[in-house]
Amino acid sequence: MNDQILLSMNNIFKSYSKNDVLRGISLILNAGECVGIVGKNGSGKTTLLRIISGLLLHFFGCLKTYGNIISALIETPTFINEFTGRENIKYLLDKKHQSRAIEMLKSLDVNEYLDKPTRAYSQGMRQKLALSIVFARNADIILLDEPFNSVDIQSSNRIIEILNNYKNQNKGIIVVTHNISKIDTYCDKILLLEDGILKISNKTNDFDQQKYQIGFLSNNDFLLAQSLLSGYTLNADKTAENTLIVTFPKGSLSIILKKLSNCNITNIIEIKTDLTGEKNV
Ligand SMILES: Nc1ncnc2c1ncn2[C@@H]1O[C@H](COP(=O)(O)OP(=O)(O)OP(=O)(O)O)[C@@H](O)[C@H]1O
Ligand SMILES: [Mg+2]
Image (cartoon, rainbow, N blue to C red):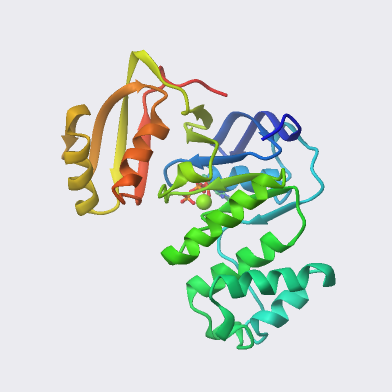
């Protein structure tokens, strides 16, 4: 990571009618840095990526990008279904980036389907095609909304490898994800989007304690997390299904996520903190 700033956002506000989704987002993305953003459904993660990518123009605040171009995968990718993967790549990319996308797609194990129509692609194959196209552009800033959706473990590892290569090339990456598996192997900073603001979570303070409420997708994950974090658990809140409340030092989100992902507990559906503990960045 170096000090060259690729993106700076200051006090971004966005509302849909009376729904104030973003209430003062400030963020700096440096070259060679990957920022991970987690947050519960509807917290505004995609809205934020849409604003950064220029897809959403109506917002308040200051957004400056210093990078060359932005390449983004936001929500479900769409393709021309009658075209093959190779033809979609040729349709969507400049000639100079096409072979790179094809090589990347092969390395993600879609070799056999490269010349089949994308209507025959599984969800994971579509995701891999979209990622290959996003990665092949020579963008300085890459935005990824749930990049690991439907992707098998082997290819997820390959994607992490690609992300780390991009960081080494001084590109900047923002990843929005519910899948915290190995998040610390590619993210330099993990932020929580909650109540319309970003809260930092990579610094610990041994003196101040904070409550974290964590919701799990499955009861199995909940039970495993409960035993893993038993020393820190306040209660297993039965009113909210599969939800734990734990007490950790302030700003420990990345540490908690690491503990969970080390035990393959990766499907978190909600993380909540009380407002007093975390810092707005
Ligand atoms: N085009 C829109 N019109 C009105 N409201 C919208 C629109 N897009 C998003 N919202 C609302 O904005 C809020 C944030 O939505 P957003 O899609 O950014 O959340 P998210 O964090 O990406 O959620 P998820 O984890 O489910 O993908 C939600 O309350 C949603 O209903
Ligand atoms: Mg979203």
